[in-house]
Image (cartoon, rainbow, N blue to C red):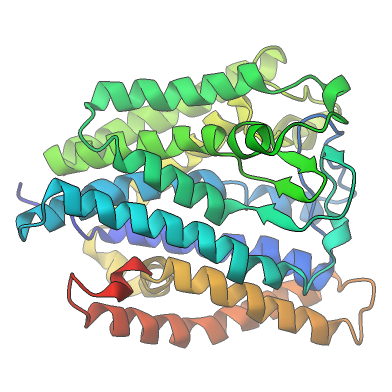
Length: 381
């Protein structure tokens, strides 16, 4: 294996780009007090301007990218630890503990941050009461990590089959719109159907997002085997995904939880994310794969012109938790002048200021973590 696979700049850079885009979405929530949500069972958001639509649309690659990159990174991490003598059991225990940690961070550290924003701007299926337990992306990442740790020995074809199967199963199990008011059990919410049931609110169930993580595991295997061939497979796979998206969306049938309700390209690209429809999954996975190929082809130059991407990508969990509170506080301050939410220009300026604040913090944390040995508890973060 000629290339060092335990730390690939292109993966870090893509993760960093995703963090930056995600911060736009959350700055919109905290500062502009706007956060459209594309749930099954209720009408898709409508946009009155290109900027409003684009602000949401360009952030849609984030969640699929998180799960795909997590899967790939798990394989690379496992390979690096085997080389220094870790047993399979020890690797599994690490992922088990980290998965549980992510779920705990969701409940005890992430959830309070959302209370700094206008929590009533997001509508979802179900209801009947005020939300007390929210399960977002950290819950699904943690649960998927635990499941994926049991799949590290599965062959590539099995992983691809599992990943595609989970995406297909999600589409098959997504309820029809007349069931939007049904109060599904908390277990069904946590596993398959997003929405609210009394005090339980789930945006990211396990099964729909596990598919992206399993495909990431398969890609990680390809990277370990042959990095150049893996990039070719990513190029072919990404192109195939986008072509399949065009086919599925154009026909307007199976694979579209919501058919296009508005004419023009905004209606065509307004896709169901919660849970991800086949149209959403293919378009966003394809975009992630092609971005990864583009970043890989820049070679080691990423470490020069793309240093902020790498810095953010290598401290993703730290970035995620800190940025929620940072933009939450910025939003509280901005509300003194913009009680109904700031305009897009102000929001984007404050988003950029937030990134400037986050960069030295993430660089410090990255250096701090790098100085810790492979057995340090800080590796869990």
